[in-house]
Image 1 (cartoon, rainbow, N blue to C red):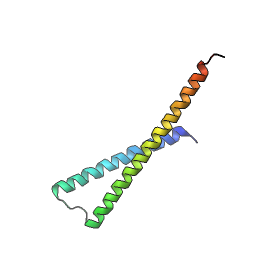
Image 2 (cartoon, rainbow, N blue to C red):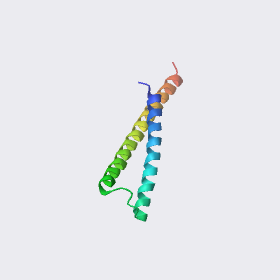
Image 3 (tube, rainbow, N blue to C red):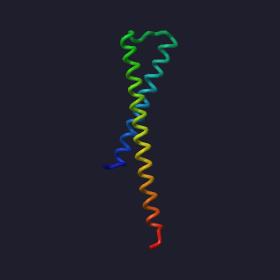
Image 4 (cartoon, helix red, strand yellow):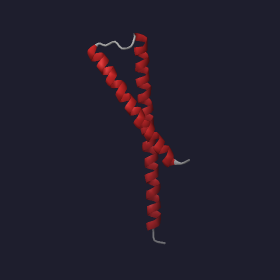
Length: 87
């Protein structure tokens, strides 16, 4: 498993997901403030489901990215300690 490629992919997905969430959230807040009623009630519930789903995916991507980065840091520290250890 290539951890660096997986970390780069999850970070990229998290950034894209965050951008989509921000855009949808701004439109949703504006819809609530100005009473635009952009979506009918059923589609409004689906939009809330999409926002919640994207938030869960974003949280998962961030957690995976953090876990992989901690693993890479641990490997690098282990290599550094092994290199510095007198033989």
